Length: 304
Image 1: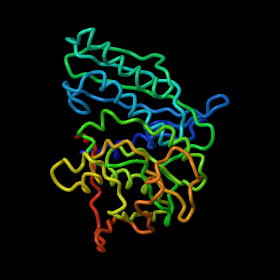
Image 2: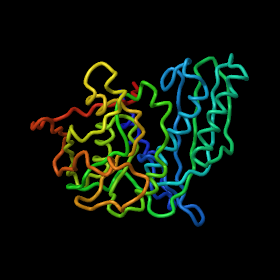
Image 3: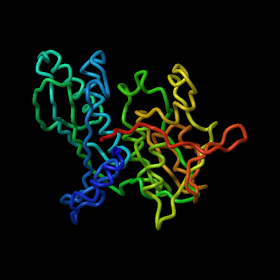
Image 4: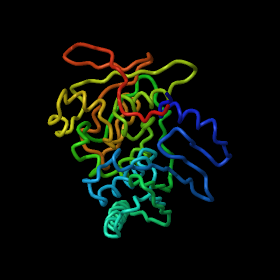
């Protein structure tokens, strides 16, 4: 069985590099040098029955498909410009349902001040599949997953957990926050939390590790912002915040004791750290005066 991250690592070596490719396979979006700008490019798909249900409504499914991509651009500190949309539609889909899908896509694009400029459509006997490619640009530096260092503090831009109760369909990508964070020199790494805080944090730490020495992290349970919906699900709300996924908030690290500039789009809570980067491997939770090691859990697609 091959996991999503194992396949991604193989693809990073499989596809050839180019002199104008500045950040390639393995981050939330690619960064390329194009004419006088550096472009940011990413691609993501949503599948009916996996990411949303037939009862969800095509409009919300369309918004979700766009916003997942825009969240990846946000994690790079990129401005959103253009979208390409590829649809594989069930053969029995009505024109009214298809137009509702397009309206959802258009609404998400308008909210982010970007434009759908093309794509493709096909039909089959399977579920609805919406694939969006997003194109943006970075005006300063691009944020990546690979800059964290031991001692950095860890932060998230919003609450976590319980996304299955509707947040995964209604979230707004943190584009303004990402662009602003990229302008702060003390921010060292960032990524979109899509597969669960623990799994995505481990991904960022792995990308930031150098010379065979693996970084780890310690998280303060009392400092994790938990979405109200997480308390309505069975089990521990904290565990949901750590592992649920599809939160689509920004996770970032910044130099210890370095304060972000006053103002900006961040909520006051996001300025307070939820933990710190360690020079030892592993993820640790501090709760009630006790420190315990965490299993790196979250969502991954698997293949045989």
